[in-house]
Image (cartoon, rainbow, N blue to C red):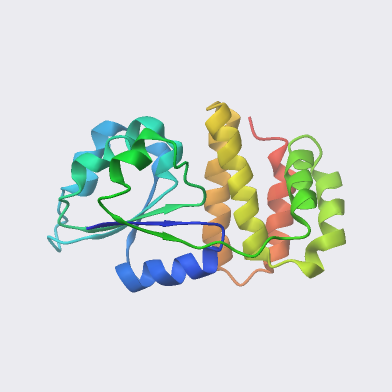
Length: 202
């Protein structure tokens, strides 16, 4: 069974994904797979179980793969597609929209939205200046929501230009996501560290 979870309210989406998949599931980065990987993901079995629980993140940004997902609707596994932003005009979306459940989770409009986008744009050339901008708004922001907006900007960049820097940015954000969820470090310090490194990614 395939279900789609989309929207920038990552906390609500994550809660619903865990209701579907449970606490233990495989995580696959949709931007890093190819169409040839799909049979093993959707139809392959593990050594320990014939049924798997799988989360695939941001596969809609990978056009060639997303358009093939509809060929695997008969998967014996529980597969959650987590899309921060879903283009409803895309072929991939049109292929699945009436065949799978799609859940949308939108957070209230953020009054600091423009500043958040300015921070990401600034960080691409000047990490220190981006951190200074962050200091002005971080006490009014939730770090996980802010992180979600960073991801949305990175995915937008990747959709426009699938270059080395764009791919490495997504990989760094994936690592940051894991750290935010699994370590006891202050979330804002982890985010600031990412902003400082962003301009140097090649």
